[in-house]
Image (cartoon, rainbow, N blue to C red; front, side):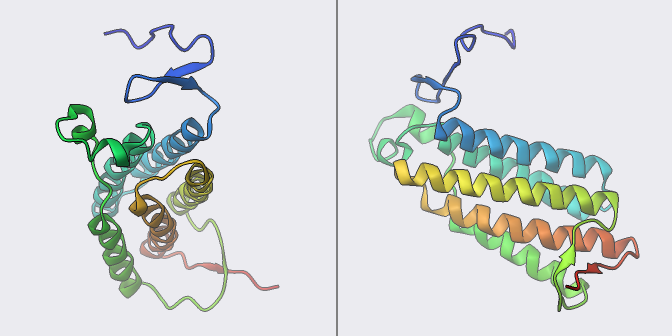
Length: 189
């Protein structure tokens, strides 16, 4: 199979249900920014030495693909209720358990970190800075998903997951610096 199809040469792309849409629609922008988040996570994984963080980030990359699948399938909520719809049944659900897993990881990381009493500056180490970049791109994805929510109903756990993911990435960035002996740089007005 060739990577190029030439079907997008006119500014359109195919959605999971086979329909076509412009590449600058709210939906395509939303899963496009998720792809950017995923790419930053991949870069962080390459740079990190901590196997536990790398493993957790790879799991998150898989979750982001599940979320992208949901966003790339118009009306996935109504379609998934139709018995016998083979495509709707292939779209992975975004569950409350996925959100809770992020919460458990945040709690576990925070046990290893000093209590945060100030705002901090992004940076610390290269790995930490990459995780902060992933965090701000994640926040942009969250805002784009909110725009999509104004247009149609989406899986309710998607927004919860994205909000929690940015908290996770903030905590993971702090942990990456901490494990390398670099403490957070406090922001003092």
